[in-house]
Length: 80
Length: 384
Image 1 (spheres, rainbow over the protein chains, first blue to last red):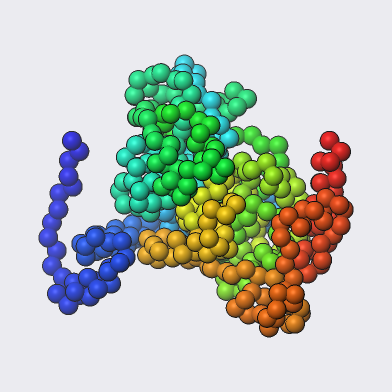
Image 2 (image 1 turned 30 degrees about the vertical axis):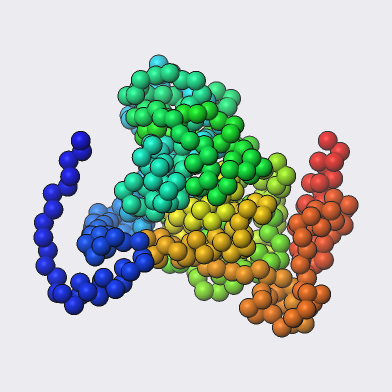
């Protein structure tokens, strides 16, 4: 059996919670918690991406050398 | 730049020492031949085009995709990406060498699951039909009753005899867009030559974004679709003469057509997000075949998912044509013409008939340079 992820409780203002309830109606999210987790993962993921990526807006796994290689290929093919 | 689907651009192309190690494993591993669809899927998993997939789907993901257009982890994913067994009888945990139809080693699968599947359930769920006249159903009927699942590595990229100057991976298109300074890029998916109607909508899209990626599908298609090699001639000719060269890029899209209409439209969109595109054109009867799907079913299906879950912005277009009254391309949203005779549109059957007789369709329907390439290709085919 896979282990369930441990969870913690985070408090948010009730009006915001209620607003999220309205926003997710018919959206495919089963609960405000699902929505909040999705949004936070997205934000945290983006932040991590910008922190680790030297080119920031290309990809977190690109090195400068890799980008230089790709640029060379693109130039050889006439794209640049 | 737009994040890959699922948040991370996958890279399953082995390199350096890791590739050497995997090659040694592959040399002693049982071998499995891939069909054309599986080969292009393997390539696309490897390059990250199918992010977040890292391998061929297992039964839990397949079931989830079939019933809800989502992977088991909840990420939107509308199409199965599966590997059919072809008589291999090995234990789970075995590494399997994957080869193309000519026997060239392409990749390695770490087998996690061998499972049976219900073809009718998959066909009905993903294609919306079990009719054997549907090419996607025909494909399912042509393969075995078991799928093999597990993560893969690409050890050697597949070799092609055409468009080798236009094969870019998602990493490469992302660097290209960055180098060009395109903050927004619209992708145009096509499996046909580009006639005036599609030229019009790509240019409408280009009015609101920085760059256009013409991204024709060149994987396996129906035998009566225009061959990819011929289409590439059409695209390069058209783009060089009628588009702004600094705002358009042409690269091929290796996927094999599923003809799954609405689901495949979303599939095409998500994959173009992985290539770094921010916008995607969803045309009328996108990825359709015959009369299995309604004209705007694909657009409605894509719109039925929350925008933040899809990430890439779909641009929906209506049927377009030459408007004789206005003397311009238009759609029903913009046309001055109201009567059918003032709208120049030809059926695919009529166009094929004209081309095969060596007759150029009207200039309002297709550019003469494109017509000439198609006439020439049909003449050559007729003499074979």
